[in-house]
Amino acid sequence: MDTLAYTYDIGKPLNIKKLAGLKYAELPQGTEVLKAQFGEVTILVFPSGEMRAFSKGKTFEDLERGLMPASVRIIQLLEDIKKSGVKLDPTKVIESGKRIQWSSAAPAGVRKTMESTVGLDILRQMTYAPLDIMSEFQVERMLVQAGENIGRSLADGSLKSADKLSEAIVAYLKANKLCVSSFKKRKDPSKNSSYDQFVFTMSESAFAAGIPPVGKPMCHFIRGLIRGAFAKFLELENVSVKETQCWGLGDTECEFVMTVLPK
Amino acid sequence: MIGKVPTGIDGFDDMVKGGFLEKRHILLTGGPGTGKTTFAMQFLYNGAKTFKEKGLYISLEETPEKLLSNLKQSLKWDLDKHIKDGSLVIATVDKFDWSNLSDILQSYITRHGVKRVVIDPLTIMRMNTKDEFEFRRNLIGLLAFLENLDCTVLITAELPTVTREATTYSLEEFIVDGVVVLYNLPIKNERRFALEVLKMRGVNHSKSMYPFKITDKGIVVYPEEII
Ligand SMILES: Nc1ncnc2c1ncn2[C@@H]1O[C@H](COP(=O)(O)OP(=O)(O)O)[C@@H](O)[C@H]1O
Ligand SMILES: [Mg+2]
Image (cartoon, rainbow over the protein chains, first blue to last red):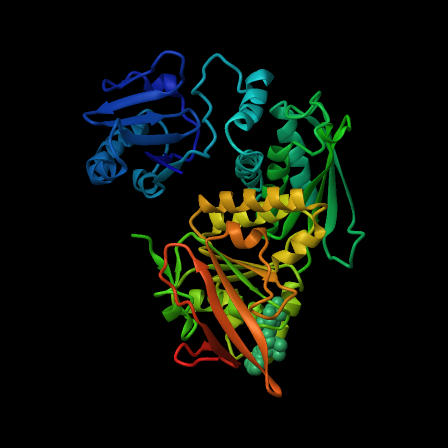
């Protein structure tokens, strides 16, 4: 789903504190994000080098119409950033502009004092409370979509092998305190496939550890994450990831098997 | 006003006043060899070629490779061109796993802009699901989920019976928006293909059974003729 903002990439990290002196800009409390106000157009500059432009409370069409004036503001801001010693090409930055997606990760700096992880209770509620108001099928689809968005962002093109991708998955799961995991690679036993199977084993799953045996696997988010990562990395949608062990199935660990389906 | 999704199949679109309704689910059912696979692929092929809509074919009976080579034997369609440019995708899924079927559908529809989907044949999923309850739960869940997405879905199902009178109806017929039945009727010493639209919610469709032929250009329906 699109939001109403445009995002631009300056291409390098910025020292926001140094920029906070600009007369039209401020540093709102609890953030490390520079906020520049030009009439109706607001521009946020993140320490990561991401810049967002939007008109508060306007429809997307309003923003599109306002985009020409917005570009002028952005150029002005970029010139000022340049003056502060950051090397950049304002035209290139403007050209990088695109509509921002919900799925983009929260840029560093939006939460100044809190860590990037949130409590397990919250995650459990957000995962399981939807079961009270929509079908299990829908809830599973929702979690898979979220997991796939993240998985795809992990397969960023710089990874050279499926092993490296698997390492990145394991590292991501650990860094975000989702679970402790490891993987192994094996020949696909069912057929003469040219692809290996990857088997991920996980303990302490944030989604499943301690849940009752409900007769089915429940870590749909993680399944989606692995599937999305491999589908993007292999540029192939015919990827199956099956959760073969889970607390939901009565196991005390979770296991996922990634198989590339036959052509 | 709901948009129409023409099949591009000569004669058939007239029977349903221009095509299927957008975002609806149609069941295409018939005995073995009645032309279900041909009809379904033609829906996607015409979609890609004439209507510039991306199609996804989930092949559950044969591997995509085998399905393609079979179709190429008897039909003069340039399927390769559309497979190459991505406007037609033939994929398979883990036939024992509804989650995988849904994962793959979801990905193609939400990330690759697929507008026409074929699942051929659903019968395989039924055979591989442990009981009728599980099958129902999954099928109803899948169709409700697909309803929210921007695509039109054609599902085929294998019917054991071939006569019009002896047709029995199962869950599929009731929960889809439309049902098209294909027949291969014994007439004198030969067999003739015929089809009818059994139901099509929201469409004042033709209620008769019409003959059709399969040529190297695919299916052609003759709504002027009576079988
Ligand atoms: N180009 C063609 N000319 C004549 N008959 C054909 C042609 N292509 C396919 N057929 C016949 O049409 C029948 C239907 O095939 P198919 O679409 O695979 O049916 P189903 O999927 O219902 O089993 C097959 O028996 C085949 O012999
Ligand atoms: Mg068939």
